[in-house]
View 1: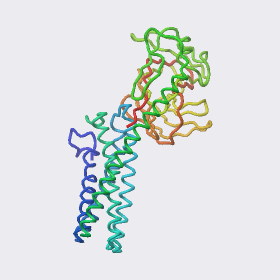
View 2: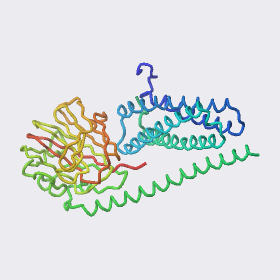
View 3: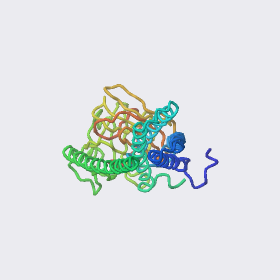
View 4: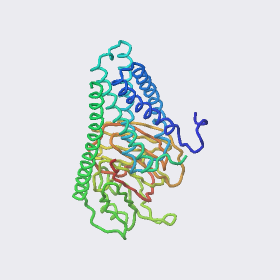
Length: 151
Length: 245
């Protein structure tokens, strides 16, 4: 896997992390649009995006575990690194669970009820806050503490 | 009309979530600053050093986000008395001498086999420490200890030969978080440990050798422990109170 990396990249993590962020953001938008348009293909699209997002989050998690011991973290960046790792775990658990719920509700057609669809949308939107916090800490590691900016 | 209501409530919810996240982050930062201030005040109360050593800062009183480097100078026995106190053993067990080695002043310790732990006078919570040391004919384990209360309660990163161990001792019982080998040379070794919340790491220079997790411990002393016999030289100890995000 390392051989496939561009020579400037310290590890796979920065190449993967943007997938779950974008996939979940678009999934929330698709959910919102399906709520007021009533088009079922939009809801299916949202569930597909959440699923792809959860899978890419799994890849981001494993690449992050591998990356953290391979980069040099300055002492002052250690707390941020630890919290980024913790929030990365929360993100994975949240969206892993949420995706399973969405797939189950879609399969059993429970999400056809309006109030259920709204509750699921609200839950998905709250998850974006967890993603934002994780991303914020990751950005701080790179841009404030210079972690992983050189191979 | 109903569709418009859904859109309206969705926008209000997203906006509310963002505002709430922003507020709680601000509050967390304020709280963190207060805690760090308390930590600094506690440290000042506990400071026991009384002598000034040729311009080197030996007080180790620090503010959050600040790094300080301790370097030896003057008389070995006096230096130990002013800058450290012992959690185990005594100065006679390590015969401290300040010497000139390769153009720099170093603290040479000759351990007699009695487990000896000496720590700075201040107590810290989230902390990082780099001890630049050289094992001459030392046989045994050199430990950086942190969150130390006494010989039965502390956290550590230990090197013995080419093996590094990361863990903690609680009520005399050792728990190892991680253990790994590293390339042990015969020269100066920058042995580094960081304790950031529930994340603990042991480095040799910039390379992570051990990484483990455990419950957060109450703040405690930081210092060096020797369990073995022979000579160890200490060139510097860099300490940092870790900056909260």
